[in-house]
Image (cartoon, rainbow over all chains, first blue to last red; front, side):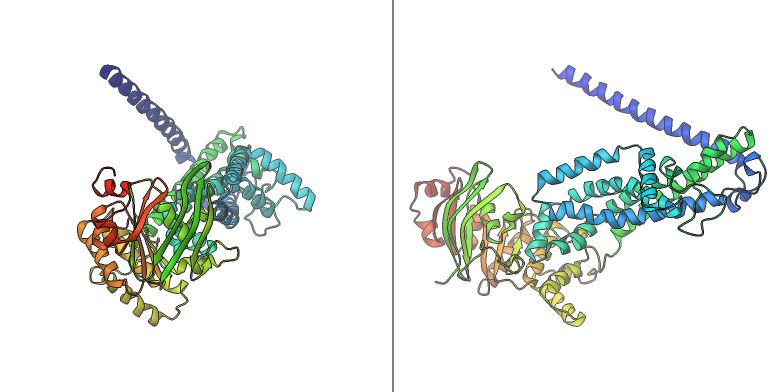
Length: 285
Length: 251
């Protein structure tokens, strides 16, 4: 009996170590190849200028249009999704606390639409645009990406808010608080770091997705200057450059991928730092 | 003897299981009433019925009446926030609000309608002193309450409970997770403040009940077996079950 138990434990420990190693190795290869191929092509000019004529045939210019465009679009969509998503997640966990079946149904539906491929959102966004008479534009891109990240935002916040102990709700109610106060003053505070993580996760999805912005945000070589005009994004920029037959331009695609990776890295480190700081210092209202 | 809380024919079901059977008790004003009984006998559920925290659990079906100041708290249209505010709750484990030590009390004061920084600040210090916490935390009022020890957190919760200016204090095994010094403080505090409050304490610790109770409600398997003044209860129990419990036959 003791022997088999020990064998079992060894087996699963090896299995876990193995899977962890595989994941880390794959991640390492991806990051290495992006850095290795990207660093060579990356230049200051690329980060600070927009494509000049003939950029996609190997001439001068850069991807500033896509960097700024992606940031503006992703931040816009994340803010919008946060403003809509936080109340929804709070509503599910504070107001609907007695309607367990309903909440589970909502969770199930959100999980389903989380799994919908982003190209479908792109097509849906396009249909929506035609319906309300909107052209390919930053606004259309923001709306589509918001819809795309909304289930991610809501469900990841929901998972955090679920862990707020019942005793804290009881304690808050017994001071005479109502539901809104419990939701906005206690639940949000208790879950600050988790909410930041949810926002970060959604931002990462928003900035990294190509399919949902393909028809909706369009592409341009200019910097974004209006909500109503098309905007460039990094994933599409990578796509166009990678599709080029010119080796130099392909190398620039890796440089662009490197930029995208670094942006996500910076944002995630920053948010982690923020989440930690929020936990440690005074929390006031 | 004036009655603060009167419970009539209270039944609570969780799904098909009946948790409380036909509870009829009276809780006297400005006394410490101890609800005593072995684990899982429905003590906590009974306590939570009193400030309608049972509302939070969809599986619980409550019927019957609880009268406070002659008013049934289950009546539709009853102001639940106000009802809960009139009862401070001290739970088994302390749940400090996710904010600073100072704001934990200030939050309660704001709910009570006390505005103005100066006024709040004076009252915060006052309640912290009442809970014997002020000296320990006076230099760290702006730190998150979660950094306090469990015993300190429980005293903070007591201060917060007092800050809403309740008439009744409901305590659910308030000392079970605490160190001996904090426990003794809470027991003594109850004795000290009972002229101004009606205190209901749930416990399964016989010693604690003997130490603090003026009045005892003994429960077993969801029913009230015996109730009455502590002296009669401990010295001259009427029921067989009470006798065997007091002799430590089951726990």
